[in-house]
Image (tube, rainbow, N blue to C red; front, top):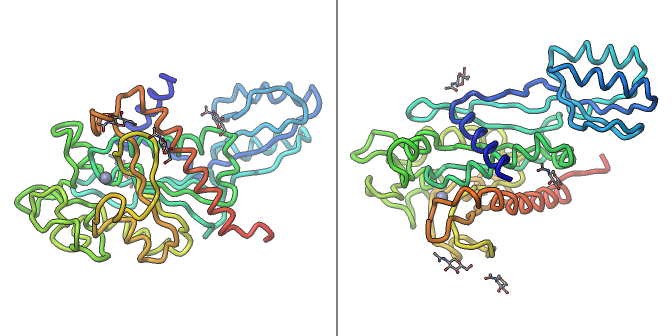
Length: 336
Ligand SMILES: *[C@@H]1O[C@H](CO)[C@@H](O)[C@H](O)[C@H]1NC(C)=O
Ligand SMILES: *[C@@H]1O[C@H](CO)[C@@H](O)[C@H](O)[C@H]1NC(C)=O
Ligand SMILES: *[C@@H]1O[C@H](CO)[C@@H](O)[C@H](O)[C@H]1NC(C)=O
Ligand SMILES: *[C@@H]1O[C@H](CO)[C@@H](O)[C@H](O)[C@H]1NC(C)=O
Ligand SMILES: [Zn+2]
């Protein structure tokens, strides 16, 4: 349990540092070994550091999945062919990591796509960390990525549906909550008297209406105009190209108390807030759009105790699986 938390934290710092492992061009192979000679060959292949075997068993006829980087693929396939091992490529390009823009302070805004290949498949999109201080949100996004990328049991979750996540949509603010002010919420642009705008009031749909502020120093300052912030521009530009196949948009935020979720129109359940990413997503034609408020730390507000991180992301992951199920049922034509 502890280990996984540590791993999440490490992943998070990797994202912040921009030192991201790119899986671009990596293929995932499914092998079926039947004879003991073939099993022995597989054991040898396991010593090859370039190949990431997802299962370690030595049982005949039970598929073994292995992820192979581009520079080892020809060699790997040749070896399988020579030894007449049955295989198929189950994932053509394991993961694409993309920089969709730069923050005001020139940090990369990273977007991660998890796909089994093909194009224009029904897609689940999530933005996280748009509010700097809501630290559980980037952890949630990273946990989703981790479960999709590292846990072979979940391979069916990206067989017909693509996932696109922005784990840290407001990297300057996120950094600032670590270096200076824990409770910072906005971006860090300097074109105004006070720093920044609330990026989740800055989207161009009913911008500047109720639940947002025109006073620059407010935490819910909507910005000088719609899309004044480069961080919201980056999401807008991505959606302009891809919205037609995004079926579900999720804005990941915190916090609520407890884990007893209420579902409904956020203007009724919480408060009105114009210029948010969820409404904007809906306005560009994305059929389903949600904001999730993750549990915070009860009396400790945004500071979820470290020991609660894992249970929080685990239970919310169950919700994302339900999202996936719904998108697959509704938008994937499995008879094709
Ligand atoms: C930002 O992304 C570019 C690629 O577009 C990469 O070369 C650079 O190293 C990244 N910077 C950081 C700090 O991660
Ligand atoms: C992998 O996913 C399965 C099924 O969703 C789950 O039961 C298991 O705990 C996950 N493993 C890890 C290491 O997260
Ligand atoms: C959670 O919600 C259900 C249904 O509204 C209610 O019966 C239950 O008592 C709630 N649990 C807690 C801990 O609030
Ligand atoms: C959070 O909810 C729990 C019950 O689920 C309650 O006991 C606790 O007092 C609440 N804390 C705050 C800060 O509202
Ligand atoms: Zn928020």
